[in-house]
Each structure stands twice: as structure tokens, then as C-alpha cells.
Image (cartoon, rainbow, N blue to C red; front, side, top):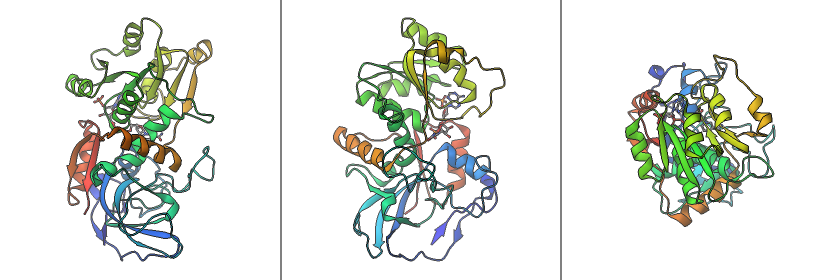
Length: 342
Ligand SMILES: NC(=O)c1ccc[n+]([C@@H]2O[C@H](COP(=O)([O-])OP(=O)(O)OC[C@H]3O[C@@H](n4cnc5c(N)ncnc54)[C@H](OP(=O)(O)O)[C@@H]3O)[C@@H](O)[C@H]2O)c1
């Protein structure tokens, strides 16, 4: 079988390597991978920015979908031929996150999906909605579940968004477009920022209620104040990180929530950060780290019920892995980037 292990950090060092075929063992599921999707984390992982001390080789990518090719003794959750995804954190099945269940993340702590076959624990897989293709299903495990968690759980006990609330998305990458689709499904008003007018037009076609080009208007928190009549947003799906967090604090209503997810603009601020809005407005800043298998299954039920389709920017071939990562690095995409494996 072939895979793309990280042997040396850097997109240019990614190359297809022949590895011994995996053999199924008790409790495990052998999956023939059909498609993999990329997350910003995978790019950071491949470049060595996510965890420079990560032991190599390591097969990257948390997200993939495939068919069950064989099952080991004792496996009863899936059958041969089932169409499944791996779950991001292989041990987070349900309930709140713990130090223990948030270990074993695919494509980081353990080998990921950028391979023709993977061997996962039977508890670490979910069947995906029938109306989705393998390419579409491959987009769900990280970006989809993260957006779902940020809107419907956001901590335990859950702090779910409500119909009619104003949700802010930042940019038009994988997490943000899922958040747009899920927030519209629950009847929220969604407003968002982007570097590009053309991307904003595409987001509006998907249901975005209003958009702001943050390249043209750097103080987009002022724009959110205008759009919400001075009240501020109910919830911000924060993927920008240090470069956007200060504005997110100013853009959130009294007792609103920031679902802190990403670090697209880096992890450290270049200027002092005023934290007073957190106490004056009694904000809730909730860290989100993907989600549990139970959240994944809940999201799948909602996707099936709505007949929703994830937004795919472009599908690359298994011989175009470097191009796919470079496309992500260019940040020209809208929604998800997929690699067809089988
Ligand atoms: N905590 C978690 O569980 C979790 C899960 C998934 C992702 N993440 C993190 O969330 C972030 C987004 O991940 P992703 O996979 O969705 O990324 P992605 O698909 O690569 O999204 C990139 C897009 O974000 C926008 N963007 C870039 N810099 C920005 C900035 N400074 N402010 C606002 N928007 C910006 C751009 O869209 P426009 O051109 O439209 O502006 C860009 O195309 C990453 O930091 C990732 O590591 C965290």
C-alpha cells in the first residue's frame, strides 16, 4: 500500500512511499481510504509548525472516508462494506473532554488518513450519511465536527446557539463554511468577514446575510456593531486567533460567546490585548477542540435530515498531494480541499 508519511518537515518533502500492507487484528477495522480532506492543522503539521518535536515518520491528515475492507475478531459496530469516517480524537467517544480522551488525534498523536489503507479501533469510526459521496464525507471529521460543537455544544453543559441569533464567521475556509451552513440550518442570522469580495458573494449565495471585506475594513468589529444596531453578535466562530481576538472581544454582545477555535493569524498578539471586555460584557470565551464521536453522530443525523452537502473547493488526485497542500497554503480556497485516494 502507498501513503504519504512526513519523513522530513516541509511540503516539498512529501512523497508517496510504499509501506507493508496493514493486517487486521482483534477489535480493529481495516479501511480502504477513498478520500482525504485537508485542514489548516495538516498544513501546520507537515511544515513542522504544529509540533516541531513530533516523532517522524508520521502519516498526516485527520480527515478521511472509506469503506470497511476487513474487520477483526470482536468487531460489532461496523460490517465489511460500510462507508465510514475516522473520528478526529480516537478516544473521545462522548461526554466532556478529558486529558485522557483528547489524546490519540489522527494525523498527530497517531498516524492519520493520507494512505490507501488505515487500521482504526472499532470505536474510532462512524458511518456517514448515505447521500454523501466519499469526497464529501471526508470533509466532516475535523472542520464539520468543530463547527457543530461550536454552535451546538460549546462546553458542558452545552451552550447551544438559538434560532434568530447573530453568528459571525471569519473567512471562508473549511470550519467557517461549515459554521455558515449549520447556523443557517438552525435558523440563525450569519454575518461574516473575508479577504475577498468574490468569496463573500459565494458565501451570500450559501445564505450569508451580510459580509465585510476585512482587507478593506480592518476595524470589522465596528462593522458588526453597525449591522447589529450597536448590540454586538451573539456568538463568534473565532478562527483568526491572535490577530482577530481583540476585535472579536469588541464585536460580541453582553453575555455573548466567543468560540475560540483557530490561530490563522498566529498564536501570539503583536500588540497588547485589552481583556476588559471579557469582564465588562461578561463574555464567555469557550475553547473548542473538534468534538466527540457522539457530536459527530448527532451532526451526521442533522446533515442527513437536511440533505446538506459540504462545500468542496477542489478535488486533487493521490499523485497531487503537494499541490493540494500548496493550494491550502495559498488560502485561495473556499470551503474544503479534498484528495481522492482510491
Ligand atoms: N480547535 C479546533 O478544534 C480546530 C478545528 C479545525 C480548525 N482549527 C483551526 O481553525 C482555523 C481554520 O481552520 P480551517 O481548516 O478552516 O482553515 P482554512 O480552510 O485553511 O481557512 C483559511 C481561510 O481563512 C481565512 N483567513 C485567513 N487568515 C485570516 C484572518 N487573519 N482573519 C480572518 N480570516 C482569515 C481565509 O479566508 P478568506 O480569504 O475568505 O478571508 C482563508 O482562506 C485554523 O487555525 C485551524 O488550525 C481548529
